[in-house]
Image (tube, rainbow, N blue to C red; front, side, top):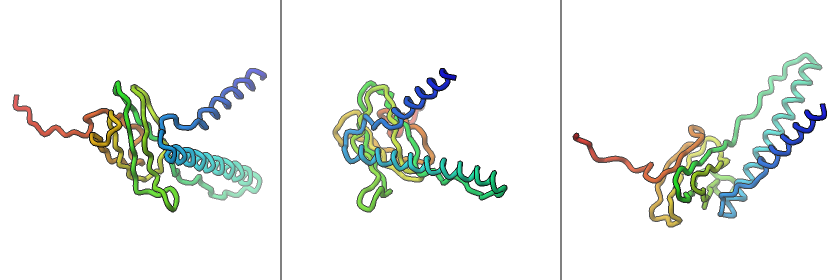
Length: 170
């Protein structure tokens, strides 16, 4: 019984540490703060849904009545940005979705080291223009348009947006 408690405590601490860690690849301060706000808002929604669900279950059992409560729809999701290259990838994500009354839910200056993955929490049902390049200059950026509901992971490598407009006649 003591081992079970020890393992449960270790797993809880491990999950807590990784769920509360700030994104280490965000170099723009406002984007970093926005990412932290999204995580905090998402955690609050999850905890509220769990609490209401538990209360609903116990009151349904005690009163023998079905309250018909269903969890709220998902507002945010994680997208994995994968850098398969041997160079650092520089990324900017722009959208037309507002986070608050004054600011869009944009994420600027994300730098993903070589052969690394970065998780970004984004609003569901949002269109993003994702600009990426192996150099910090914005003259050679490639652009992908993504819809957050349709995608879970993106592998960003140079040339992904270049269309092959030659015909092979061999």
